[in-house]
Length: 273
Image (cartoon, rainbow, N blue to C red; front, side, top):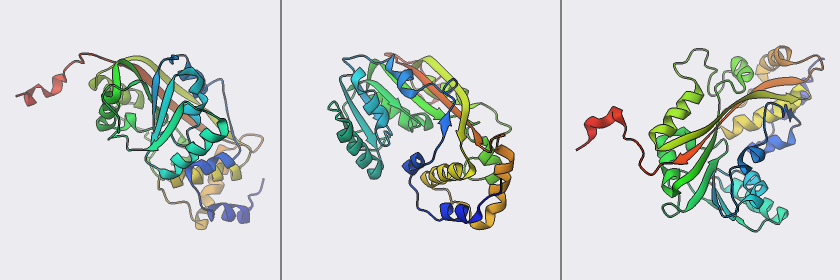
């Protein structure tokens, strides 16, 4: 297969937002990538009040809505909240709402929610964010977080060297990093799913549309047309016998219970008065 350079140039010159990636065609290997809805619904109850931190276009909260009483989705991006509100209307869902808010400064009362989750969201990114979520979560409430693993999209990182580099050598893997963060912030961990699978694109052009949306969302500069050789290298390296493009998907789900009396940080006892 010979690459159409004009088609590649056209893709690179478009404007993107994160949710433009839905225009690209791809599929997951569902044997290795369980649906988020199926993963979370078994932990929900009909009397729960649920918070989705970093809700994006709201599709996960809306899809789960029949499994809980009420739900609120927050995101700091107005465009995402506008999309979520439109999706709510089109889905005719009545027990969820969406609002602009920051993950580290949640505008809710202490211990207001029974269940807090974040899909590829900010909770696992820092102590500030997880403590914010823990404040609004009831004691013995459930906290679930999805984070992106270190192997995710490693094929792209190896060739394009944009954003977080593929870490060949590391002191601690991503599962252990998130586990330590949760434990130090008073979460009694009950579930860890370390899921590695594949995303398959029908051709290099669909992959490029998807990747441009991801780069744009992460505020990473798109490749220039002069970097066409890298796109060609990517195609030759990651195509299968059908000229489909196959990349790695690595997601980690971790869940636990808010403890009533979390253990002290033994490392920092000298800070006590």
